[in-house]
Length: 189
Image (cartoon, rainbow, N blue to C red):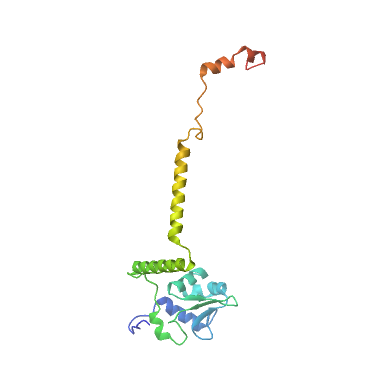
């Protein structure tokens, strides 16, 4: 658990949230006191958000909760339920710990560690599946080589490549156009 600094101020959003929930209009504590319950998010956003925040947008309010690491819980009755381990009915002194998410300096190291962990899981899953992946890779490489060779052969084969149509010779075209046979049939002129 994080160390609670007695001198650290409570974030303004968290202060406003405590005021809101203690006011009890459109937002209450869950029965266990460990979560916030908003029975009608639309009404809450329209009535209470403008009083405490500079907007009346439910999505913006939910985004702020997310930024402060509140997690949405499932609710059977359609109400919005959010919880944070340090934001509880009886834990006002822990409110100092509730802070906005910050990108840590080691975030890339964390991403790398997660990536390695996922890769290790993939390898373990592949090994457990019984598929010989090396054999499968060799087969795929062999098939790619076959297709490349076939493409090269087809590209070089003259019968397959359509020849570009050459424009007709002008003299033959004119001779044909003005031929006696065409004149008899009503031709062009």
